[in-house]
Length: 419
Length: 162
Image (cartoon, rainbow over all chains, first blue to last red; front, side, top):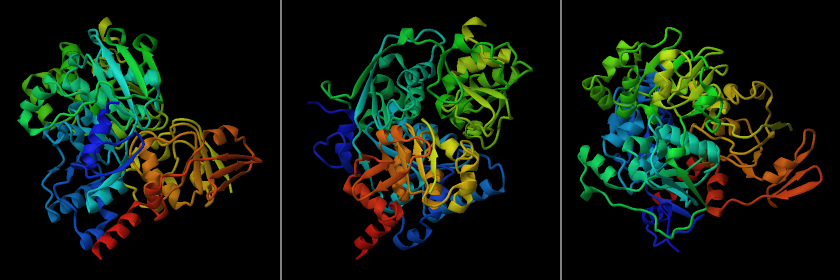
């Protein structure tokens, strides 16, 4: 019997010939991602760090992105403590406020490579499966222990194979596809599982794959992974990484799957997740016309250049409705600068969008666009949980960048095809 | 001892709102906000030894650990659930908080029934009916029984240092 991607990569990382589903292995991850939670992670082990030292200063990657620039004295102090830790422990992989959202930065800086094992104290660490890495989220306490020992345990997950067939229609995006999949299998449909994407993946760009892998956790997946192909290799070459700098790992043809799901891409409709769960799936026709007070374009799910481009195309020569507000947060400084060069930022700003600094912004409800009671927001983010954007009496609808841009024009949920 | 009953897909935003995630990290700061957007009565009335009975996919969403830290701190005896989300499951082990996956016991339970847990025999008693639940693998149990991951890690580091 062949092996799945998860079995192969975890065997390699545990220095074992082969591993079985359910087996518990000890692994040394290649990188440990932390963000604004670094101060809390470090404060748990301040005495231990003095006694035992940091296991490896090159293990952590620290990106300040969650509440940036600082919103108040407490978050400012938090950032200050992180900068002191970075300095005292000679951590070189540190990206201060303004570099971008951690997952985008990790990818752009070339840490997320095929066959690498990355753990992160953030649930969307699963994004790096887009590039053929095994990556998953852990909590702060586990990150603390990793700083001291460099090792942790992982259970070898069962795997789900999602077989993609054909091509998405115009205005149907990777976001629509992943909302459709989550709607089909449910918010816990892939709990504990490794999700592998097979089939016509060549019809999906790297940006598309990041959006899809990013939302793997919203169906409970441990990791979500794409095969490495010419599209991956080409992307990595654009960030200065040659094919000799990484190994490629992929599942065997005869690997065993707990479930196989086939998706005909041409049948995926423009999709929206309605309040208050990501698997509350609807077609755009079912929700058109709902008034929205805020439209949010950004986040680690949909703040990339292709997302800003589609929004700029839709908003070119048009105006944001006075009955709503459009917030735009590029996922990184690099994307922001590219979007300026290509004129997208100018187009979006002239249309009436508010351009905010790169970072997580209002996604987690801490600042920069918190909602009021009874307000509705249409968002390109990955979660529409009750209270997620700071107010538990508000409602969040999740959709693609095209739907968010179109909705901003009308002040109500709008099908971009009907503009 | 009180039983707190909740449904399916309870996410960590409901257990501890994201807006506090960088301003509250200590257990005593977490406690007043526990389950704030799910059940405002919880943090006011919860007592040590109380039990939570929950549906499917409890603890899904963000990797924030404050729910597990807070529930351990107030002395919840155990959370009995149909299933738990992966990161929350790990987080509970890391805090030494006991989760019991036992869908049949959850389905059996009705308001007013008595609940007892026999940890040695891995059994739950709901009124007169008993349900067995799987034991954790020994290497994971060792972490939980050490009181959590940091205590376990310190023990390991001390042994290595000898």
